[in-house]
Image 1: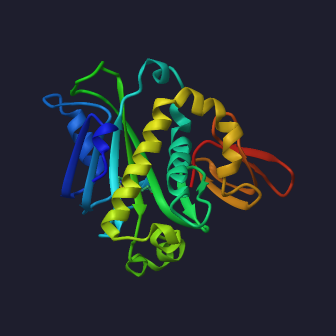
Image 2: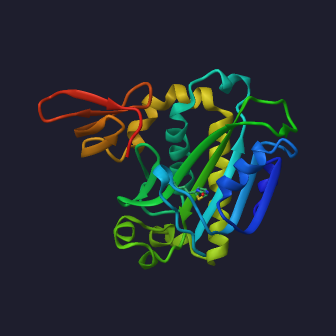
Length: 262
Ligand code: BTN
């Protein structure tokens, strides 16, 4: 494995686990345990991988499933972290760019797409840290769960998911071929490196978000439908506002925004 110990203070490698996010949350909430951040938890197999909105996340031999446990330092603790998913999506897109023959895009709020199909999903959860942190304690700890289809057998997915999903292997640049395990560890290292760089430079990354986002945004200029807690909004997507909310202009010319939704 590439030198992940240069990036993380703690690394847990598991053969099989229900969900790397659940594993992390249970340990963080257990006041008897201590842990060090940043902490990487990577599993070969997940039996109950979780996606956003209560969906499940299928894991097979060709997928990479891991969680990064992160506690914001003083400079990041003061800022609104609701735009964190967008930043993590951009970091994943950056990490994959040199490996694939297409330009990775981020679909608001945080799916990473290759050629219009989903290759990676992100589930960010936060909790109060009851366990003792080895470093300066922080009131909140974030569990950043990332699933990446490296070489997933898409026919195994449900038909709707299969039609919308892809794997890195389908878009690999010709100079990137190699064994599946080599590719997975390359992807893991590159993604962890970019995600941690983003987290370490978060105030600057957030400041630059409105300038950088258009380069990554998959939805801009497309007709979209967003299911929000207050109902559906639909129309043409015009990127995001300063809060990270998606901007939609409907057929009647009315502008609407949604901070969260599907
Ligand atoms: C989504 O697209 O809905 C988010 C999927 C997130 C899946 C990852 S896999 C590693 C981590 N552990 C989980 O149970 N979920 C996340």
